[in-house]
Image (tube, rainbow, N blue to C red; front, top):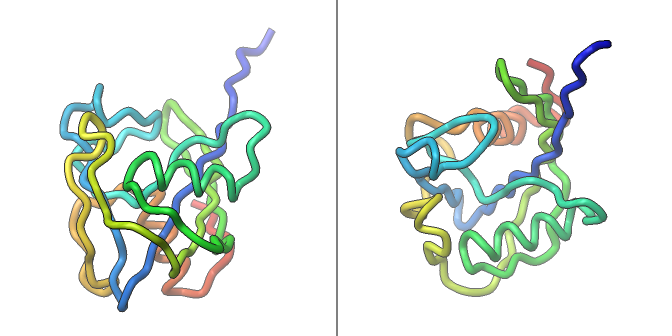
Length: 147
């Protein structure tokens, strides 16, 4: 019998303000920067795994609030991508948000150590690859990216 692995669904929320994008620095300890897609020490947008029974939008609202303290408004699906590593496979749904309430705070310091605004044309490195793909899809006006 074949060993079946599950495909997960992840959400990434690209929050834009005045031509800048909000990115968080993932903890450098791989056990704390918990993600099946790895990425310790990289920069990422708010997001996470879709919970059973949750809509894509509900996940975007929840993850953004849990991680940044921001209450986003009117998230729009921007793109999807097929994100794979040797040990994990996620379908990532990218959202774009331009309206929100609140001030950015580090809500989960054990996972994200800081949040900063970056010019979309001058992004930090290294980038968490699912977040990088969402940004590339936005810049290139692509809905689907297959890698």
